[in-house]
Length: 504
Image 1: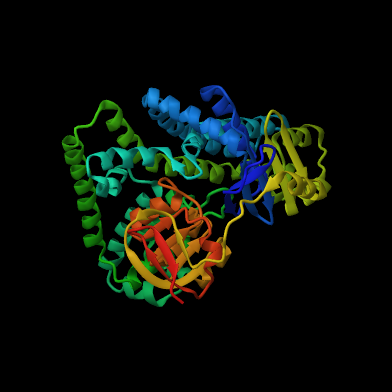
Image 2: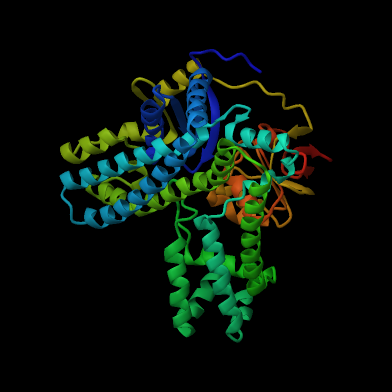
């Protein structure tokens, strides 16, 4: 591995469709949470360029935080269980506030509007302070919970049950959306001729038909959109539209899905998983610590997804506040998203905005949280990045790479490298989706994939979670997959062994 220089920042992760709001709160949340619960703050930095973000970390600093967190859990596993509970409670509180704030923003004076914005920043920072404990457990090649679970099972000759024991019993909101949509599709099949219309018409035309001739059913469909339009929102949307959900219904029809049978199978499988988990836990003769670790590993898969879902929901609902701020300052919502909390406060109370700075940030912005917060843009950011960041040197001249099995299976197919929603158009059913990482807004492409391969991620990453829900073979943490495989390559994904190799 490349020697790590202590004053350098190294790449940690990549994401897309991102702006400074709300990501500038993440470094502060990590700093505050780790300082409070671990006694020593963990630092993180970010670069946003052309709507894509690179997260940076200092390996020695991250390692200290990782070790401190592991020691806390090993001393008292209930510590992490309490973090899970606080994470969920904090996220739900944030959603309630965001809904209220967007309503109040319409009539609030500038002082009150600023107070609403600052309160949301505080709540979101708090949510990050809890939620980032799970990523901190994954350090380089170490994923504490999954490593501990593998060790527990190997000692008993039961390592083949890893996937079973790490399957969550609670459903994500994304999974709930899919279940509810199946029910709606079941009702479509009962209405004479409506399924044919669904297959024949474009999404917008189908919605117009519902509005004109099937008003009761349209209200049911509309309610579904209202309940779940945010599940693919991530940081800044856009929210899913009626047309989007109509296309999902059409996909079910084209694939000839039997909703009654599918719902029954899913229900039966859920009950089976729960029963098999209970039986296995009884037969393993576990110590109290081992049992708690297994349950923490299983629930960690759910809670990492839940944290992101709760925050995404709050980002969707806080849009009203951002839009109101924009109108007051004669700025677009995109420009408001380029402002830090103190800048929003100054702008609302003093009516002064540095639009030149915002224009620079739209192209490139860098922010780090160490003992102080530093935010640079334009040429300043470029110079700093060149001096203080370093990339791990990897060998891209290979045709085979290994990662972590997220969901087993073995598939051959054509590579489609997709690193942002705008690239999803090249995906076709049966293609193999290769990405740096995945987010909920890639779900249309993921649903068509025969397999998923990602550079980043571990047991609790998005790709791992959705691959289990959709039963798609998946290998995560391959590091160089999106670099060595190109669109059109034929590869084999052996998600039984965690090996991905180019065939031609």
